[in-house]
Picture 1: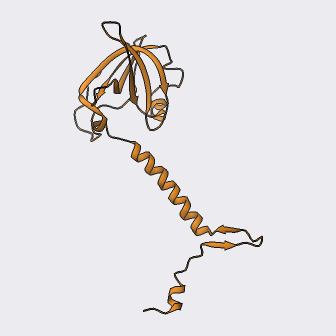
Picture 2: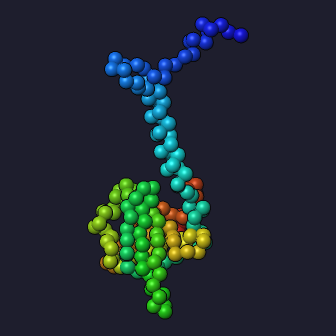
Picture 3: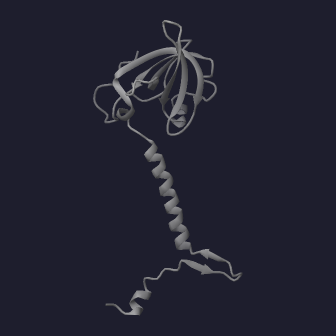
Length: 168
């Protein structure tokens, strides 16, 4: 058993008393609290993120054409929504997921310029595993024929030697 003087070394001041009789956390505990908050925020983002294979099926490629109804430039993924008419004239709203805004900007996209609500586009991607009108987008083709990538290729990101798709 140690003596009382040995245990005094391990004491860390939790609260410092200042002249005005207000109490505040010591610098050590303020730093610890800041690290805990930062770790909590990072964990929230990581928990919300997912792999391609968790949501989408690489064996379910889809190509749809329609009119843009909404665009969300958000992190960690951007989304756009397209009204698509089937052969019977029924309209279904599709949700497409893609790169975050920073990557879109670096690949040639400009918010509220490149693609706007009301534009007609054709998009290639992979449908969600649950079969709903939700997909991972890869390439968007605009009415003038211009093409831009909106999302990465299908796969797990393992960097295989063959391309996921042959886009022309």
